[in-house]
Length: 375
Image (cartoon, rainbow, N blue to C red; front, top):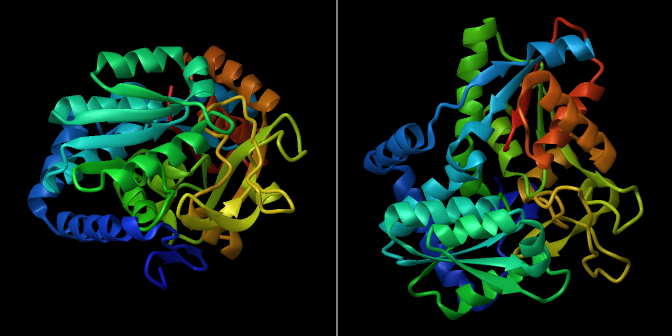
């Protein structure tokens, strides 16, 4: 990171003046927590005994055989408590909010997974919880809404704009501006103003740290390729972060190719987007000629966000990570294939990464780790 809160040219804090103080307060608290062994020990304890970490690194023999390419390992984030990687970040931020003396938590959710994880952690730590969710997503993700309510959270429907994740974030930020003193904003991905992108990445980096130890244990060496889907990009950053210095390792981030390449039909920010500011950070965004954010589409509710985390934008420009996209049909085919061949029903988001593993043209001597971000 060069300038404060920047990854190369990307990142920063593009927020109203009222949010500068809470962001500084958050950064100070986070740095103190990072350096505090008691905080880290509590987080490790919850990772292990509450969420069920470490999650297994599973050799998918039947997939490997069927596809005839590299040896495929699945990092089973779907086996976390609540069924996805989202809980890693929520546990970290929940403990941080508690440390800061904030009693009320707000969050945004698209697919509902981050909402469920937030509601779960709030129930665990005895915090008030409100989750903003677009009406369209509420309709698509009824079961997750029920779960959040069951856990004691209030789900607030958002009826503006496309009624999806982008609009839910807008509302959550508006709420935060108004209730800064007692409220903690639990952002769900490597997005938003600094320090969120770095903080969320740090909490998720447990994925890659475990995978590194596990693959050396299983194969006696590091992997050749890492693959993860990229919506906001926290599961990918969680897997990639530890391996960034290992330049021999190929890292592939998979965006939602949706129905096709036309603007509005997909959520592939790197092939169809341009740099701009959204939700407090400078990154790649899907926008029209006038700089207006365009609607996105993906078969998975968790990948149809119009921007991407700023650290991904920097990794894209330096070429450290290759970004590609998988369309709806390919993702659905992979979803069925892994279900039939391995008895693992993945999230549609994760299915994009699985589909990319199938497309990968590498020899059978290569080791591939696919992040199975959720179920």
